[in-house]
Image (cartoon, rainbow, N blue to C red; front, side):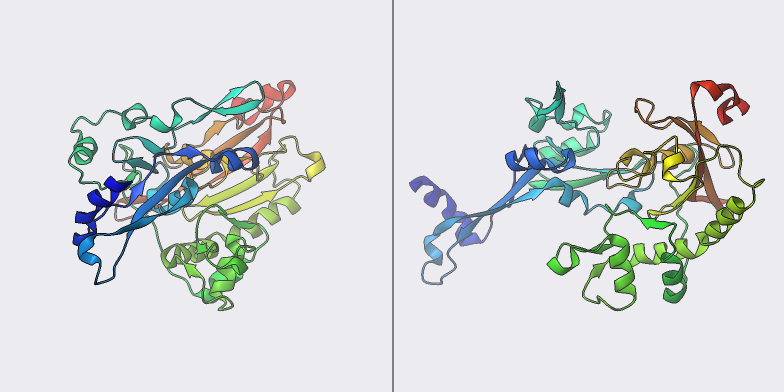
Length: 372
């Protein structure tokens, strides 16, 4: 400990020190109480020096202060809507070890239990990323140009130009609020439209509730993403006619295609509209688009699977696939397509929409897939 005080003196005198972020680790308490996505933590720490004028030249180290941070909270700093359909964010240390990455799978199954892999906190960037021929990121790490801790954003652009343009628009708050309150509309609750963790009184709000209360002026102290709110309001107004259209179809016996269980639409802002044509007791595919069906919802890590697949195909084409094929729940077929806007030969994907049919072995020959 005596050496620490000696070594710290130059940093104290020059007011120059590093903020240290540790490699990812499993929290033993969270491991037993929380979902897998909440397991990984990092610790941020920095030295505390004496700032008294009479002792400043002595360089006195008082101690160290630190805080444990769930990596999930850090990932919120990279807004999902800005990364695009196929973009993603990852965190890494200056040594190239992964803190968080979509392809980092720190747990494995041992029987029915989940256990951490022996080297989960020392996975190198090269093990989860394609080779960087120019070694840009690696060179920056070696030279220290990324700092002790860095947040890197990697976004992919398809050869067809997908992701090159985005579609935005403006509407009044009054228009948007009216259409945000429709029963078929939800917002991605894992996205941060408004910061609800700062004030304990706001933690009971869902993201949709927080947005509505902020726009009404009932919670002006909320910190909200103005750009995202503008996009959400526009999407709510533009997609509002879908509810009336779906309702009209449900009232017309000849309007709904035989066997359709649900119709849905999602936009780049995480807004989703969903209508069910059958009640809970009559559904064959019970888990699709429910809170447990993370793969087909807007989450912090990804856009819904049906949105991503629609975006990968030419505008106007329909893609069919079976969601959750390994699930014991009833299987279904999803038909999805992208909604695009083209202005002056510039095409942007504004949304994706689709329908769900139940699929059983008995009616496979008459399923939408075989008909197409």
